[in-house]
Every structure is written in structure tokens, then in C-alpha cells.
Length: 242
Image (cartoon, rainbow, N blue to C red):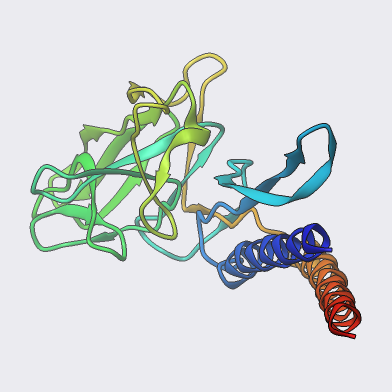
């Protein structure tokens, strides 16, 4: 009966963890460049017998591409294919993101909402507008004409699913992900950049709602299991006293 209680209790904990992950996905479904996560679990095996419960193996990020949508931002850019924007904080910190919503700062850098700047790109002070071509060339239009001022490079990893999330849309390199490799957009079979577009979250609201319902049912079923096991223990205790 203690085994039943433990199995049901770990099932409740697993269902709660799953609910937390799905809820976070749903809360960020409208965030450009957000990548949903999924929780994984395993059975706690008994010695030569049935399982003893459920253990969480953690969560991993799903890097399927979101839908590309036209945007109104003058410096927005999206990645069509694999890869990440390489960002730096100006103090030696490095991060990677699929969120291409940038704005121009007074020093000519392009920065995201968190203040991270797009590596290798700086606009001239007299730039009236900017654009990015398919091969990553960054051009500015100024009173003197149009000229290329930078070349955007994208970061690719041997195992991007092993990157570490450090924010809703920011990721850090890990030993398991492998080192970043900078590539030029528009190479054969490589990623492309789409200026004037943003990649939407890859979270489906409908699917997330269905997953929440399933996780809630699993939680309720395990809660009933805990109640039943507790009642059996109470009855056994009364019998032993009688």
C-alpha cells in the first residue's frame, strides 16, 4: 500500500511539472522567436517487479520553426531555416536568439528588448534607413546614397537542442551543444534571412490547451490514487489496533 501511495504521489508531481511547462509555453505563445519546451519522464523501476512511480528527466526545448509574419518594425529580421542571431552585451557576454525584433540605439547598434546587441552590425550616424538582403548584407541609405556597412552572420550548433535557456528567447552555449559556427545566410541548403518579417512562437495555442486538459486529468487520477492508498492505510491501521 505504501508502494501505491508513492506511485500516485510521484504521478501527481510529474503531472504538476508537465502543467507548469505547458503553462509557460502558453503564456509565451505570442512572443516572437519563443520556442516551446516539453517535459520528459521515466518510470522508477522496481527490483524484479512493477514500477514504483514516475521521475522527471527534465525538459528540453523544441526548435521547430515558427511561422514567418510581416512586421512593422524598421529593423525587424527573421531567420528562415536553422540558426540563431548572435548577440552580445558589450561586456563579453554572448547569447543566441531567434527573435529578430531590433531597434536602433544612439551608438548605431541594433538591440533587442533586453538590451542585447546584434553582433557585427553598427549603422552609421547619418543612416536614414536600413535593410538586410538575403545574403546578410546590411545596407543603409543616407544623404550620400546607399552603401553596405556590415554583413550579418548566423550561428549554428552541432546540437542546438542542448543549448541552455537564459530567458524567454535567449539561449547560451553549453559543452553539450557544441561551439557556435558562424555562417553566411543564403548559402546552399543553409538558412536565409527575411527582412521586414518576424518569426512567431512555435507554440500552438490549441495544442497547448489540449495538453493542459490531459495533464489535469492525469493529476486528478493520481490524486484519487493517493486518497485511495491513504484510506487503505487507515483501514489497515485500524484493523491492526483492533
